[in-house]
Length: 516
Image 1 (cartoon, rainbow, N blue to C red):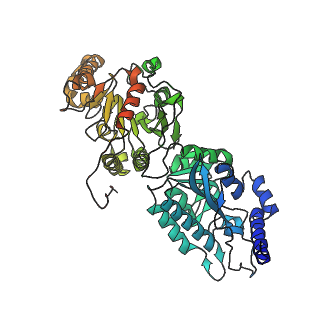
Image 2 (cartoon, rainbow, N blue to C red; image 1 turned 45 degrees about the vertical axis):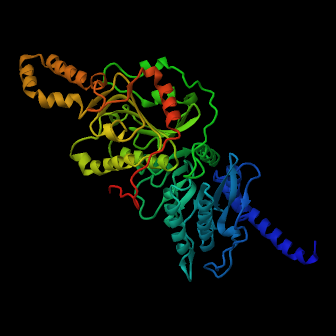
């Protein structure tokens, strides 16, 4: 090696040593005391061992601080590069809280913007880890990095639905940079250290916390007790999704019998429809090895969404949960459902609907909350799905839910119904009250109200039963086949196999316009 190279290699070695030192030993120690990993430790844990290839390591902050002195800024506070996850390439970045409290700088934000574009062009996932006090403030230049932030946000939007985007909030994430995790497909929170807030006054103790964004804002998909757990959740998510929208997710070899019959399914649903049950009991019995990866579990729990496998085939499950608000389709559950549908369709992941819902709730309260327009998103979204779609109608399929849950002529590939399934324009109880109000008033006066009410109700329930409606294959809401509940798993497996290579197109257009 020529002597002329020695000086350059010394500079490179110095640069790499500075990067490993990050913001200094004291800051690294403080990071660990807060229960957080450093940016570099996070990426190393996310990546398959030895696969991290850093990009942008020589970048530094070129502006002076408020005191006129240059501050140490290895990587300009961003560690990023190419990784392998489960043997597949991806791009990853982490904001370094040990460098100026992770505040984003002009060069750091451009680094991330460039990385997102690279990931999109290479057609591989992008994973971001946030631990940042917001944007840096310069005495001469005001907020630093807003120009680059605009490009970063645009790149996230442009490559949405093109490549999987996963974000982890592992510390504070405030100011304009807080938009980035929410633009991602999935947002994972460290429940103990994560904080997400755009700005403005804070009026509650839980504002910005993981629980706040899970239960109230609905922006959080998964909660973790530590950085390590959050990173493992991100790695698990990637097992269900392909690297980009032009490929299909991987089918793995299953250890669970695809034809498994479940006697326990006969005991989940109560005999009296006035009583509820938890849809998780059914999901756990039909998916591979009882493994269901639920998302947004504490937000709008009347709609359950998550990922699972059926004989190794990945699928998204969207199920109404009678145990929460009777499984109604109110605005929050509609939004939760809609976003999940878009993700599945974008990445060619099959949809399995489990339907037992009394439909959209009526009344002034819900109308003021926009129940119609939120429900219209589901109609619009489901109509544009071209991924494989399988629906199982368990019990009630009333009103508009009949359509948005894939129970009608909305294009599902297969619709199966348990013998307990009922199709009706609204709940039979409401129809009895509306149609037979005179007879019921008379019965109340004569003291036999319950007998008369139950008589009319039984007639209507018999009329709305799938065993009655199923006699006409196309005229009424119905199913392709009524099945024994114990066959549910095997029917789903066979339907997914049959529809795996399906071809479905929607009318050509520049873009669709979703309801407000």
